[in-house]
Amino acid sequence: MEKKNEIIENFKTALKSTVRSISNKDDIEVSFGGQIVSSDKNIIKLPEIDQQQNEINFSKARAYADSESLKLKFSNDEIYKNYEPKGTKAKKLYEIAEKIRYETLGTKEYKGIKNNLLDFYAKKKLDQSKQNQIYDAFEFYLLKEFFKEKDLKKENSSFTKYKKDFDKIFKYKLSEVKESVNDQKTFNS
Image (cartoon, rainbow, N blue to C red; front, side, top):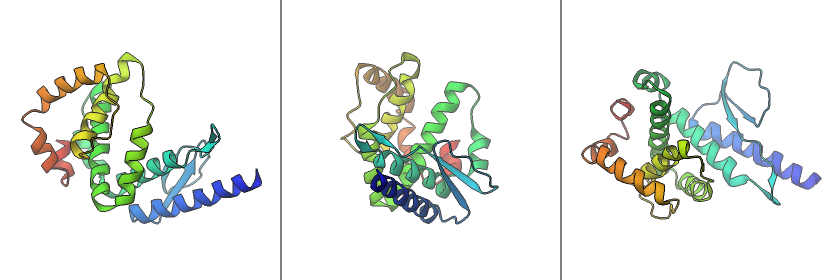
């Protein structure tokens, strides 16, 4: 047990360093799980690294750390808030689109991040509630479009229905949206 704790603590230390390196910010405080932080610094909250079914959830922690680091590096909060839509569902879809945008930028720059994120998305448990299926469907729709990965086999019959709707909505805009991935203001608008 002592050995596992040491491995987890070493991994946490490595994640903290990685977050600071990717984000290019030294004033980041990284917390895990419900850890209480008492700092005015930028804070990234990652899931607790624990043992699940005799495996430590390293890949989930890496993917979350990479995504949050990329958010700090490539997403301007002021621009994000300026274009944020009204309504709970619209806000969630907007948040997903912005996340895919900055993750796309990161995967172009860092091959290891791409591998971590694809591994995470391939293993991601989907929300089975009907009211939340649209979010998973939208996320995987954008992932397939932006990451150009065919290995994301998370589709089911409801995803196919949503894909048709998304194709109708984005039919003429998708190439323009893809081209604006480097320009957050245009992308978010």
